[in-house]
Length: 160
Image 1 (cartoon, rainbow, N blue to C red):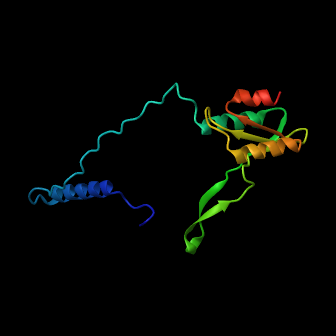
Image 2: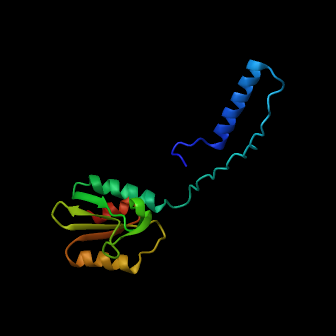
Image 3: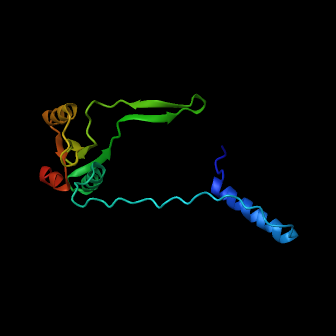
């Protein structure tokens, strides 16, 4: 398929316009009527539940922004781990495993005093997995700063 292929509706619209043009020019009988696609009912949008806890990605975004601008933090970055689909040209698309240390935190960085920083972000009610807890404990045992953040207030509390 071409990159900018027209949709069926666009093609039908162009065909109708051409048909009406030919009819207007030559006036030879009725224009051919094409069947139009039935109109789809409008998609119902779900109203967000204002009482629901924020999603993990929303908490992550807020925590990351706070850490990036916190006066005690030198730098912070996000590590995406897991499997991604990578395109290798003629070979096609294959899964590519990102092999970091098991349980590595969502946000890692460095404090301005030189200590390693690890922040695992969880939404309200989500449990920490054993390998995530082991990683955080390993960072603490080796003199780093490691904590779980369920909201921005948790980060402020830990970095006091």
